[in-house]
Amino acid sequence: MLVGDILRKKTPRVVTVRMNETVGIAAKLMRANNISALVVKDVVRSEGNTAVGMFTERDVVRAIAEHGANGVNVKVSQLVSVQQLVSCTSTDTIEHVRHLMNRHHIRHLPVIDNYSLVSVISMRDIAAAVDEATNSTPQAA
Image (cartoon, rainbow, N blue to C red; front, side, top):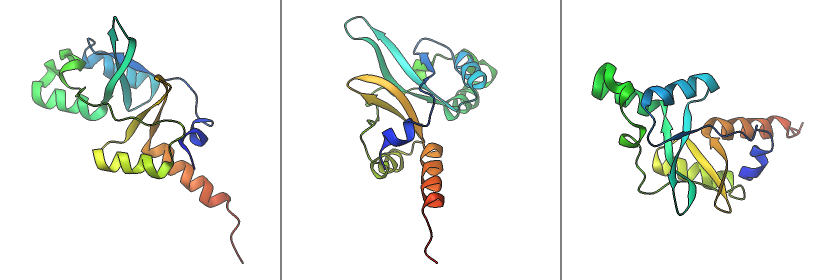
């Protein structure tokens, strides 16, 4: 099974947050969209909009734990590591994506095809697809 097989069943909308936004804004975006992770984008003059990382519920908790109530005013850029964005493509296998997630201890991966952000795939998406494939396979009697 490929990442693209799962993406065909998802809405193509990707919710993003800019590096200079606050944790409070990011948390509101996650709540309003009922999601647990945002793609972090940076505006680079020479490259346009660039996905540089992921911001998750864990980052919100970390900001509050480290800064108390003022954690909501911390910039997303202070919490996101942008050294190496871990991502996948729509032609990657689910096994490869699961390996990446396990190796990097993450639950969400941006899907980037031809240098364009097309979606985000989560561990939950993968589990649901595997369950669906398992349940739709005819069982031997």
